[in-house]
Length: 412
Ligand code: SF4
Image: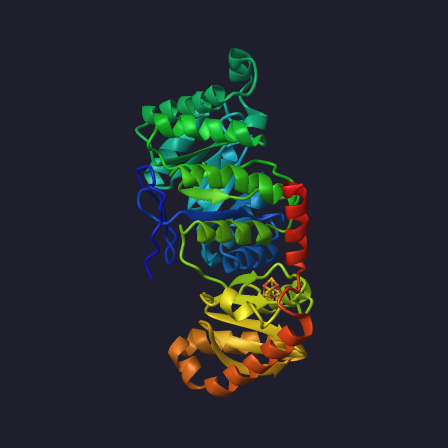
């Protein structure tokens, strides 16, 4: 399925992270990719690989591992051949670990220009990357800006961060290397937005977006989304990372979900929607939605599934969902694309959703409707609907009383 998007992406050049079976292209018209970073010791090969697989399952296209000492570089030599996704080595202070990571076979390096500053070291690494066709991310970080630039601009500013990237690019150019993506991250959302806007006007290199040190969810998720989504909506950004103080699986999942929500990536997992619940609800919608979310987990079933609190309005409100369930008098009414297909006891609502989702995923919507006694399901739904309406009346949310009160305020 081709996803259409209303966001006109700014044209960028392309780079490739050349994983042998799962290469990832960044930039140009390639899909915006999701990155995350392992939090294991890279020397712990099995632990790091297990986390890379978990990140991959949660939606990461690219995974970064720190390469901060010799043991980490050795670990990378064992991890890279077994990783299902391209591996980026994160290099901070020592250029030698960049060279070591290249020996380990990594698919990309991340260099922080604020931390590796000697031109001869930078050029040596760039030359090696060029010889091996390994791209580099110039990862400028507001918190570790080159002190000279900090002084020149009187602090961390968008101009200072962009200049930091440009200085590094110029050094790379001296050895004729430009296989580069760039990030200018800051923990301040307005600052990073301005820095990326400025950068995107000055370069056509692909951009890696992120709000650095966003913190734990939910505030961290909100900050990262505010920064990343704003830029994506302007067509800026080719690859993204949520930097959360949390299990990195949450980062990968959030990145993936943001891109799906913005129509920039095809749906991979269940898109669970649920009504907010109201005076009509026949179940604890929050609890059922949470259980459904847990039951589906990261399973690759690209369907929209609705959990609705009542059969009075639920099937109508969620008629566009691929599959849904609406509660009615200790029962769950299942519907597929708005057509009632089955009735299950309340405590079987979640397993029934999973079973129907699997069936639809495998056989399609039409086969799911064809296997159901839709007339019987519709009759039962209508019966429950009528009973609930009789019990609760038309105005279970007491909206009319509120309307009366509004009139009293306005008319008096
Ligand atoms: S009317 Fe029913 S489906 Fe709509 S919000 Fe209320 S409980 Fe949920």
